[in-house]
Length: 113
Length: 110
Image (tube, rainbow over all chains, first blue to last red; front, side):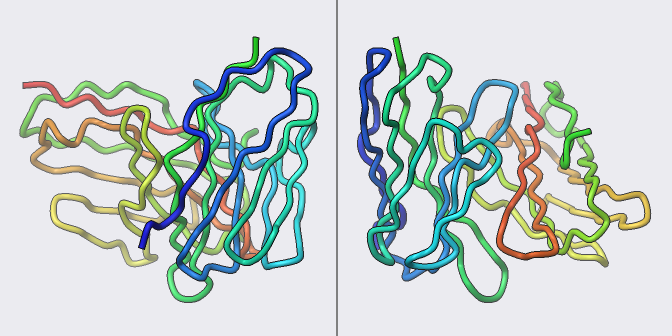
């Protein structure tokens, strides 16, 4: 199993450009999440999807959109990137029974100039 | 007040020493508690769950104090490889969202 995979690993954008961050998991998890991590701020939830076909806003959803394409894939889109969106983005998925362990992808480092 | 708060550190720890740090949470209805470990420029990974009665995993001991709304992590016989940021995670009453603390950085030195 690959676990949670994310693409790309690094990206540099100019202000106003758009891009989509891709995430996929092969663990048959129902719930998937997008976080951003900034120095001193910890992990902040952008959006999450409790199951295929549903998405909900997290703590910091402004400037982002998401798509739960199927059970495996959950993408994050920046329509018009801003320097404030420079961050490390992590995708995660969660087991649905027992201890709710969250498995993270390796992250995408995004720089918006 | 943040939902989950941690002392950012760093805690500078001599190799072989014991270090302990806490995490406070604001929602008394919180259901589940975890410690995650994050190495520099890597993704967080589950270290251990925290049970009401306290639990150990090798050199690591986690405690939950519901009355005072905090959890703790103690590391005994610290190793250089324990240097990392330790993230406290709380699951709320709804059970589907995890809230992360800002992390406590631990540096173990020879």
